[in-house]
Length: 376
Image 1 (spheres, rainbow, N blue to C red):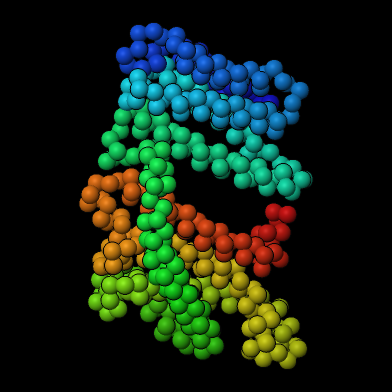
Image 2 (cartoon, helix red, strand yellow):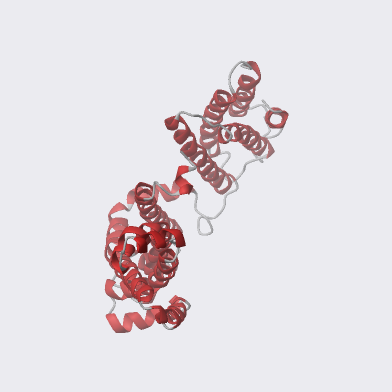
């Protein structure tokens, strides 16, 4: 175990001990309260295990301290919701949170440096490290908003957002169907499909590169807040107008990436195809399209997030009484910020899943690419 990591353990110990001596809340007269002792003892247990079990590997020590920090975090989560601590946290409690931060840093740092020939174990660690980091961000969010009494209008706590999310699933699903399953998917397919078709045309007729590509660049530079109202006037208030906005946003990234990908095949490979007397279309399907797949998937992944953003923003300018953008705009006017954040969480989940789907398909179809061979 490196000295740098040992220092973080020492910092956690010092902060946990200091938390014993400071008030738990602003009005706390009894410093050594039971919750403080319990939480502090848990933090000390984490670092004690690391120092005591010196025979363990760094990976196992990282798992041990991460597990104990999670348990201590659960205690802190319960403590901050006590009536005497809501909006009244003192230095004792915050020092304990800082001690958890130092111990968590040590544990996650050890796990992130872990490498193994066992593919399953390595993939598990690769998933665990960002998941733990995300959980820590949510934990700090909860502690700060509840402990310091942040008004829900400014920033609701994650627990309040989760409660709203669980209680409004029917509304959220209706908005999801309207925005994602209709506008986003339809616009995404049309935008990416047309961009790819035009890229083939530009590749087949070279002089179009000087004519169509500048026009595509012009279309991509159009501000969405200016285009969306026009699309609403042209295609109405329902989802087709939102799909039209998505088409405009996704067309140019697919066009540019596809044109670049079709030009990525090397000269030696092209000469080999000519030596076999292969024409344009056999060369396209057997050489140039497979070579262009990484570029095409880059465009698909970029457009997976652009499409959702475009559809939501377009709904601000006219839509039926359903949809993610409609719900966000109306709930902000009512100061129901927890519902706004619930819609944001739904959009984040949908966008991440959409992106992940294409990343998975890319991994399956482009397993031969050097970037994936290097990870094996």
